[in-house]
Amino acid sequence: MAEEILKDCCRDRTRRQMLMDLRGKILGRDRVLVGSETGKMRSPIKIDEALYVETHYDTETLLRILTTRILDRVGYDYSEVKIAVQTRAW
Figure (cartoon, rainbow, N blue to C red):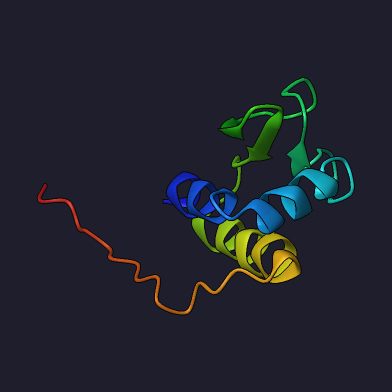
């Protein structure tokens, strides 16, 4: 989910540049959250060439990072994004 949203955000030229400008500037406790390389990330996803986002967090934390620390800063409207929870049949 995070990958698709961030890739959609990158389709806009201005927002893509804003995401690129965030590389190395948004940090977690131990890792870079948005970077140009994967070296300091535990579970990176590639969003674009030289643009990676750390995803090694629980769902709630990842959603908070994605929305408040990344997408809000680049002006991406995620208000229409819906999240569905699927339960497993044991």
